[in-house]
Length: 162
Image (tube, rainbow, N blue to C red):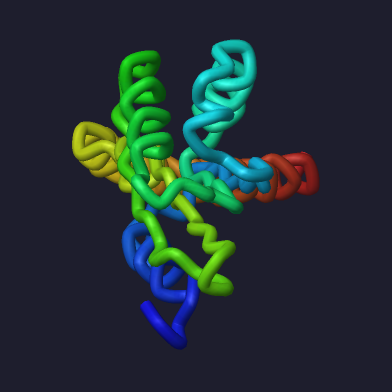
């Protein structure tokens, strides 16, 4: 990634979300998990809290991943996917920083939440058809209102003749 730092993963995530439907709420979060690595992954209580946190979001940024082997972050991804029905994917930045202290950023995204569900597209089309029908009904209602106004005028005319 070089000079682009974390911006390329951000651009990739945004590109994935570009097709995201506006009508749906997208939950985005981030967490600086200080010195996230093998040691932190060896603490079940900590891992459980982190998993509970990440699974509440469609897109989640984990900062300060310090694990040159990258085993901790992929172990975390596996555990996350074992607990959820909708799989998460991971985009991992290059290792950044000084030569002796490097860290990474991990962008987790829920494939169903962030990318949308293909099954919902069919439902949206049906809803649009229903909306068109409602619009036609509204037009009919407007015509009925005009007829009612005409009837009222006729009644007034009848009263004046009596």
